[in-house]
Image (cartoon, rainbow, N blue to C red):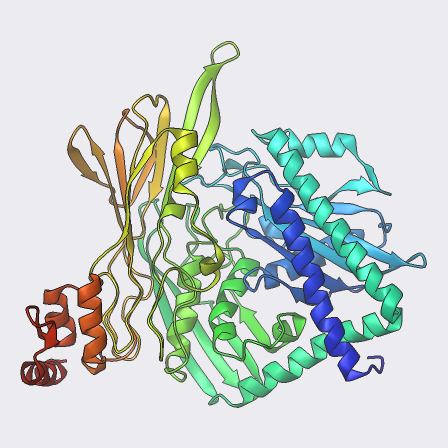
Length: 582
């Protein structure tokens, strides 16, 4: 590593992050699709000339971005010019699922490639059996969409029209795909401009030296954190309620080994892969396994290859966490992503109980696909609506704070506009509210779940529902004596008849005016409920977060509603009784 002034190195480290933020802002503000511009399902990364990750704006995509970049460079490193752009969406080349496209380009200085930049974005459609690609019926990756292995779409700054058309025409929304890919290319150009400005201002050697310094600095900081943990092996497990294909109680198991200044996470004993779309590629598993670890270390430690050096992930091919090609992986960023994180949380809780909380949400899937008959009687899928974004919840409590909203990486996603939905689609959101008593009881309460009811348009025809519910909470028990939150649930109401959605509804034709109700469960509590400050329980009863019966049953707090005060003697007695019987 070249010598570099540490102050300059730290300044450049922050400027690297600022460049990635500019790339992200460019992508979000210029993309056509709402999944990028509103939900912000995207990521960016900066790499050394040898493909080592220097910085990223997405912790969960850190390993898969690094793996994808490695695959691209392995194939193209000696066949690349400074104006090339290479794209891929291949889950089995370091990616996640086929809807996540990664674009990578080099930056040159004096005719030499000196670094690489990458962006990743969730595309609205890339073929497959179901519009949008999240297909509960899929039994192979091709049923989810076209698999594009690394290919150049720009060569010497010129668009390769034949290649581009071949890729884009796999999408049912080629115009949207084209505009989104243009936004990704624009983001790369912004990143190249920002890094070129840094090279011009500070010099190439200073920039390259800072990149290497950032990785080494992260390595040292992360190693120092791990060295404070007790050495040993710790088991963790989390269970996926079902896989939509007839299997239930699918276990994700991990053995976390702390050894001096390194971590090893062994997922080899996890259950065999599913026929359905609840498989996670090894790179995606790595990302979700890291989330709980990143949540318990100093948040100011940079996210780059310095962390990846210190954490070894072991998987067994043919399992839920490392499936054999061509298994589908369409739902992996939710399930088993959440279960992978929760298994690691379960292991961390054995030796860091005061630091843990959940980092991924137990999301439901609920969307409609509209079909029309056009062009000589061909039935086409023309519109996709995602209703799961209207639900939030699942955030656990942690020592010193109550849970609220969505946990971890999902917290960054804003709620979609109800007004826009109603104006565009003609449906009505009848209810979107917090559920009383849904947060897991604890010294620090789990976040409340939400209930959302959508009435589909009365004029709607040829509207088909796809919905999957993992009813069990990923974290079955609360933390250090806390209790679990409420479970997920969903049901349809048609002509006044309520029809529960047990596990999955696939391709069900909706009657006009039907109503869909989604409940996203609450988060788990942290610590014994009877140790919660009674005054906080009183406030929550008054605010409707906890019912009067729930206050007495879960917290042992008895309240005089006429005086709005706590019955102290009765509360003390009730709490002693709860503690004794627990």
